Length: 203
Image 1 (tube, rainbow, N blue to C red):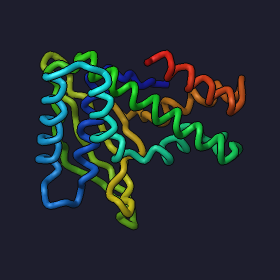
Image 2 (image 1 turned 45 degrees about the vertical axis):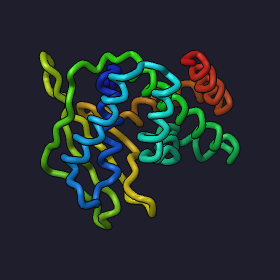
Image 3 (image 1 turned 180 degrees about the horizontal axis):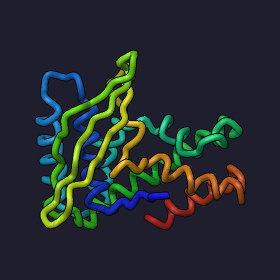
Image 4 (image 1 turned 90 degrees about the horizontal axis):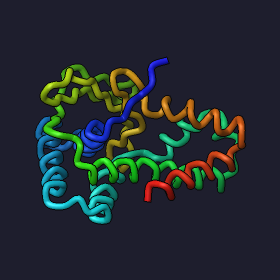
């Protein structure tokens, strides 16, 4: 099975573009949104690699546009239905923190080079038009373009990203395989502890 390799520069681009796409449906075009958001984030990176400031940037510019509840539910899979409400809350909190810390560390590392996001034609919507897929590609000098697709659902407060695929490999599915193995060995509480330990290790 093909596995997802989240290189830091690619993770930065994915999150940046997702912020822009979250405003889908506003007057500004998706292309302009990608450009303006990317410039804003990269402008901060050029000024500082301070982790605290970069985490604040992630919390303000990225987190509001992801549906972490749905992402966690999809990543945990069948075990989600077996979890208590308190366990579900802890899973969501820990998974959210894991993604935010990964993003912050990628920003702090500053290893995304000169990569840019380009729009691709051909978005698709579900029958009720409440979901859509936005197709893009990440381009960096000296590398082959990498396809990045954003699966989004329209919520009362706007479009929310609930999955990202890189070269047809799903972020959610990638984590689901890891989580299933942990749950099988250590149960739901074991998964919560594993996520918590990993988050502490990234501090």
